[in-house]
Image 1 (spheres, rainbow, N blue to C red):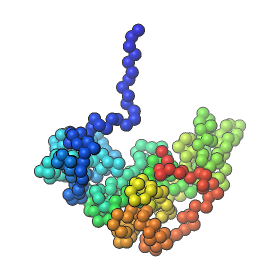
Image 2 (image 1 turned 30 degrees about the vertical axis):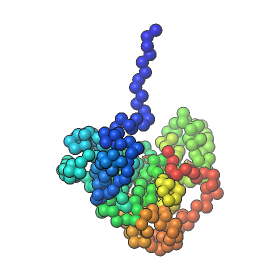
Image 3 (image 1 turned 180 degrees about the horizontal axis):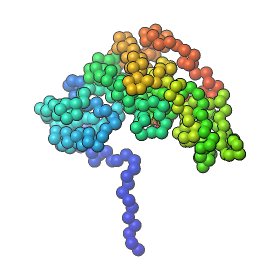
Image 4 (image 1 turned 180 degrees about the vertical axis):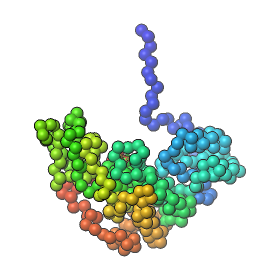
Length: 357
Ligand code: SF4
Ligand code: SF4
């Protein structure tokens, strides 16, 4: 019997140990300390005395193949072919000798023109979801609004003068990709989906009915054809059904707005991971530069910078000063939308530290 050949496994996270810089391999688990030499430049020192210098550059997150090739060329030229990406889409180039750091920085500037930073108490690169480029759900463009926002926050990326690290996330729908951040920008819909009964794809009807977290969708015969109806009093405008069925359109260029949430974190340092809470409701969804979003984020950062204590994350800062003071310092109106009084809130809210995965 001939030997069965299996296709190579190509899904899931690859074995990261194959991609470690040789200095990391030699000193695995034997690191002594690390220091920030200047914004965007770190040194890790091993117990053996080995050092590894890291230069962190803010990537534009969505990159062409040409740009990825340039990144690889820089890694080949200065870093023995090694680099890595952080969870916030920064690119980290690593080298053994301090004398290699400035030539590496010069090459990054010349070939990529990307800013260095995102280390220590700064705004790290903004994590965003796919947006109009790739996904079928977005009511806004997370990639575009993030680019506009980073242009406005460049000084907070390249300097380390905030109380602690600030993670900002941007999500173009309410239900999927964005994870919690110190500050998070999320689209909001304000009415139930519009159903196109003529184009309803009945093969997906059971899934559409089942996916609604509020049990607001039920089967219905419309003009003799199988379709669905939405119980509007139950619908919370999440958009999950639109992801399942394009004939249930929830996006609306006239009424969709953006919201800003604050105080989420994944870290266990000092305090447990926390959920975000609503700070600003009803920001206009105004491509291509979303200036109202930048203005609101800058207000939060400014109040945090002025009154936050060293090492306080945004959520810890708000817990200490209280929400009344937060709204006073930022000038945001406190509205009825800031109070979650939905009858199903307790049983329908996601309970993990992620919005949804
Ligand atoms: S956040 Fe939603 S709309 Fe944006 S890319 Fe993810 S699934 Fe698509
Ligand atoms: S928008 Fe959300 S709550 Fe409303 S019907 Fe669709 S899945 Fe259900």
